[in-house]
Every structure is written in structure tokens, then in C-alpha cells.
Length: 417
Ligand code: EPZ
Image (tube, rainbow, N blue to C red):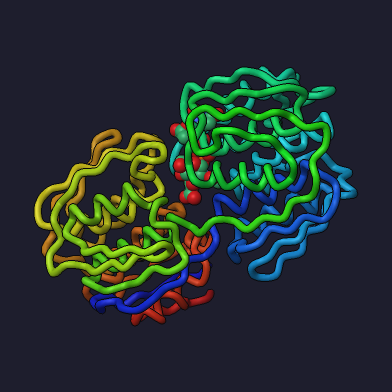
């Protein structure tokens, strides 16, 4: 297992180009299952999760060719309507094949994802929606077995805002008979991006990016050509890095609108921000101010930035209260940040961060994707050397992270085992 060794204490400066969004590329690739033919998805980041999605589609009989940053998927010969445990356990987003498979082929067998490092993460709302659309759902030996002659439009209300749940049902509804209304739908930019991909395939979708989405099902869709949006979480992570190192980083190729909630908190923490149409320049202050945050579905403060923001707050002046409302177990990074000298405690979903004078390098363990990003943020500030173990978590979501950091002046090396 690879490790990252970071010598902290440098002010990072320069420009960084943001990659395509993993969480927009994954549903776009799954959407290829909705139509027969050759599909093309551009700006797909070169990440382990993308390869896992490719393997999943190949296992179903599709051809998947990936060359940075373009995925070409051919779906003429789908002959296996199953997402097996081995692949779903590697990547929960595999569940995104359920809606398209069921809608196009009338059948799907998908392993239940199970819990993960950040929470229980059930898929009951995905299943509730498909049932409302007329699917028969059975659970057998850890698998969801879904069938339907043809899905029909339905009026569906989500009790909880769910990103992949909204995406799964939006894809299923695109081929259903009649109109589907999704209420209390996720408004994340990745959902809106999937809607534009589906629209390019011939789907009729209204309201994507809003909490009520209306989808008029089509009998058939055409192959997809789509370029995914830039990764707002990668962009936010580099902003946190500029802040913690007192650096000056221009983040290029991003959508400032997608990181609004985060920018507001960064400004409150004392960072200087300039922005243009597709760039944000972030200048870190000499001393950071403590700021409270509470995660919420988009357009609120993203749970995927909570860990990185906590790392930033670990050296801020004062006490900051961080409330996580999306996942019940998303404080795994706290114990690791403490190893570096951070003064953080938590009870339930509320963490109290008392700003420390500084951080010190240590051996730390990555536990999930964003937790590992927070360790990188902290390590870049820490005095001395930090070794981040199990860095494969980071590789799921950050393309060429060491190269990008090195170009900004960081001292970072990957040690292979
Ligand atoms: C997506 O996960 C993202 N993954 C996550 O990205 C992100 O953290 C999360 O949305 C929240 O923004 C992808 O887009 C591939 P949810 P998802 O369904 O869709 C509960 C990353 O680091 N819920 O929106 O799985 C659930 O338990 C990650 O890139 C139900 O109760 O998250 C959670 O508390 C990790 N029943 C809340 O809803 C359901 O059927 C939101 O989860 C579905 C969800």
C-alpha cells in the first residue's frame, strides 16, 4: 500500500488546474446503459473509481475504453444484468447502474452496498422510488433483485435528500412510460450535470438543480456525448491548502458558483478571495480566524469539504464548532488530526476545534477519501514530516495529487511498497 510523505511548512504558490468531477463522471458513465451504441464522456478524471465503474460495465458485456480524459463506452452487447458484490464493495457508486439497467432491460441484480467508513448509507430511497415506478424489488442473499416490464412515471417524494438516489431515479424515469416527479430532490451540481447528459441523449427533464424535477419518459434514448463539470471538491481542497499554508493559489478551470458556501466560510476565516468566470484566487492570511460550519445538502456547506475545513480550523485563532448533518460517522479524521497536535473533541455529530499554535508531522492513517484529503491539508502546514498511510483512499478522488502539489511548491513524495 502506497504512503505519502509530506514535509510541511511551505507557502504554496502558483496555479492548479482542476480535473473533472468524479461524482459527475460516475453517473454519466452509468447513463450509457440507457441506450445502445457508442457513448463518449469527456473530462473524466483518471481515478481508481472510474476504473472500477469501467470494470463493472465490462462485466455486464459493455466495452469500456478510457484514455485520459475520455471514456468511450459501447453498450450494444449487454448480456449480464448484475453488479456483483466484489465490485460494489469497492465502490458504493456502483449502485448507479440499478436505475438504468432496470429501465432499459426490465431486470437488474445489484449487490447491496452495506455500510462504510462514514455511515450506514442505506439505499432504501432508491428502492422506494423504483417500487413507486412499478418495479418489483426483492432482497436475496445481499442482493437487490429488481424487475419491471416497463417502469411507469410516478410522483416520488424523498424523505431525505439523496444525491445518487435522485440520479438513479432520474435515469430510470428517462425511459419510463409517462411523467415522473421527484420531490425534495438533490440540487447538487452533479445532479444537474447528469440531467444535461440525459437531455443530450433525448430525455426531457425540467427543474434539474431545483428540488422538484420533472422527467417525461422516452421510449428510446440515443447515445451520449457529454463533458462533465469540474470537481468542486477538488477545487475546495486546494482552497483549504492555500489557506492553511498562507499561500497564494489560483484555482483554474473551476465553477466558482459551485463552491459559494465554501467561499463564504473561507472569507470569514480571513482568506482573501478573487474570482473570475472559471477561476478563483485564494490568498491565505498570516493568522486564520475560527469559523463555525454545519454541513447541509447543496447549496449548503458540503459534507465532502467538512474534513478539509476542520484541518484548516485546527490552527485558527479561537474555537470553531463543526456540525456534520449528512453522515453519522464522518469524524474519523479527528483522531488522526489529533496525532498531529490538533485540539479537537467531538460528541455525536458536533466537533469542537480549539485552534492550536501549530501542527507537528506524524504517522497518520487515511480512513476514507475526504478524511485523507484533510490529512494532506494538515500535513502541508505541519512542522516536520508526515507519513499518510493507506493513501489509496485519496487516489479514489484526487487526480495526480502529488504532481499538482509539487508544482505549487510542496515537498511531497509517494513511497510505494
Ligand atoms: C453522494 O453520496 C456522493 N457520492 C458522496 O461523495 C457525498 O458525500 C454524498 O452524496 C453527499 O453529498 C457520489 O456522488 C458518488 P446521499 P450518496 O444518498 O449519494 C441517507 C465522496 O467523498 N440516505 O446523498 O451515497 C444517507 O445515509 C463522497 O466523494 C438514506 O437514508 O449520498 C445519508 O445520510 C462520499 N437512504 C444521506 O441520505 C437512501 O436511500 C445523504 O446521502 C439514500 C441516502
